Length: 359
Image 1 (cartoon, one colour):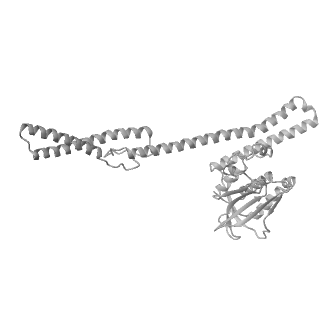
Image 2 (cartoon, one colour; image 1 turned 90 degrees about the horizontal axis):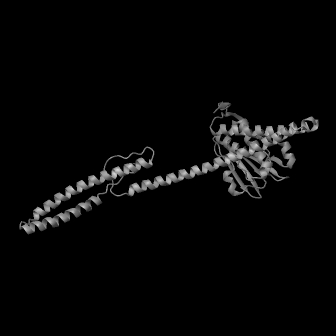
Image 3 (tube, one colour; image 1 turned 180 degrees about the vertical axis):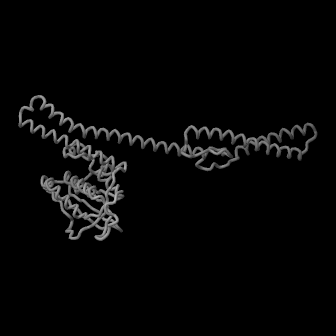
């Protein structure tokens, strides 16, 4: 058993005392009536009876309780690996009650967890269905229109095929992200670690997102001028995806004429922290714990119109955790949001042994 049961002989002791007292009264009365009353004989007989009664009662009670407790343990399978050892058993039910209560609490937690997982599963399936059916129906609509005769009009044909192609591209984008996040979750994605300059990588992402920023007139900038490279260890391609996803997110939900600022700071020991801060609309506090869930959206209606697979932040979290690093988020409504993550840093002459090693 998980807890050593206390020996308690109170019931057997009290019962033996009761039987002995009754026996002493009856025996004394009979001897007195017969005229052969002997106090020493009565005392010896009572003590002998008490010893026999106590032993018999205790053994019988222990065996009776053991069978009942063992049946309960077998029925509820209280604890994995727990076993009920035959031996002296408590005659009160305190310890057994504690074990049963602990079992009930554990089962309640398990049931609550299963309910949460079931709700998450339903929500996830609903989100996947929504994300996939929108582009599917769009593509289907354009193709059906073309089949109904619009294909004969050259201008309409080209326009509808281009729109259908965009729908297919969105489907491919969602499926690729789902495939990536599945690999990350099961640990099936090898990371090609190498030393690289994080400042150079961030600048390259700035350049790639230039057209997106121009549409909303948002400025991507560093917090200061970095004249020297800052070397880190990691999968360069995956870290670039992390930076891209976070910057795209800040552009998507940032205010027009806004600014997204990136800083790279030395942290304790061998770490740097990359901070991406915007002055956008901010995120309500109640949504922050769920930000990194797959398909979770703060704005259920408007955010879908912004595009994306709904997996960006979830992918970011898994990539950072695959590097055994941490990601953080702080946000205030009307002020903006800051996403930050840590990376292993390296000096300009370090890292030869780390370069291009696979996890």
